[in-house]
Image (cartoon, rainbow, N blue to C red):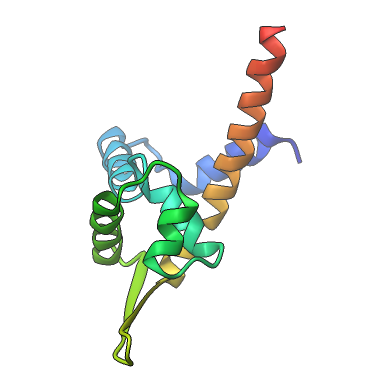
Length: 128
C-alpha cells in the first residue's frame, strides 16, 4: 500500500465529516502540549530505551540540564507518560518508567524518526 493511500485511510478514521477545524486544531494543540517542546520526545525515547535513573536519562540526552530534566519529568508524570517509583532502601532509589499510555504514541515517534532521517538525507542530497 502506498504511503499516500495509508495517509488517506488514516485521515478518514481520524477526521470528522464534515471537518471540524476547531476540534482538529484543539486536538493538535493538546498533542503538541503533551509531546511538544525540545525535550519530551528525547526523554521518552531515553526511558523507552531502558534508562530509568535520573542520571542515566540526563547522560543520554546531550544539552539537557538537571533543572530542565526534573521539570519535564514532573510534567510527564502529571500527563501520565512516566511513572516515578521511589524505593526506600538505603540509599533511596528513584526510577522512571514509561507507562502504557506513553507507549501508545510509539508508532508516531518511530514515524517521526523515519521522517527525520529521510529529511536529513534529502537535505544532504540537495546540498551537493
